[in-house]
Length: 80
Image (tube, rainbow, N blue to C red; front, top):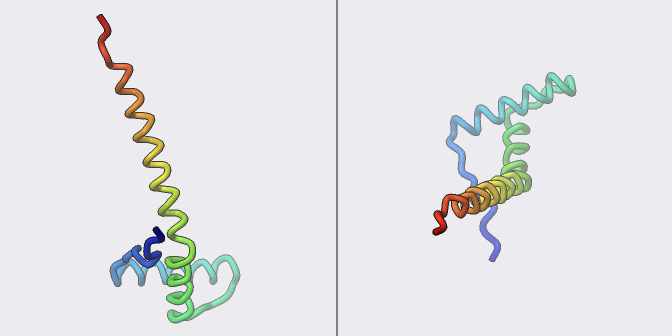
């Protein structure tokens, strides 16, 4: 079952800070000024198209970490 990729929700302040970071990136790295609308649209693209992959990687890493810790629990068993 495919889940809605727009489940990643950000506050208005978070979006504004991230859009500003995109503007700074373009200015510092590409010597290109982009406006608030362009940076906001870029952020929307990143959230929709790229962020789910980062999220899924985090879920996978968490699963692997917890699975390894669960295996460690077996080492605490006492045998008679």
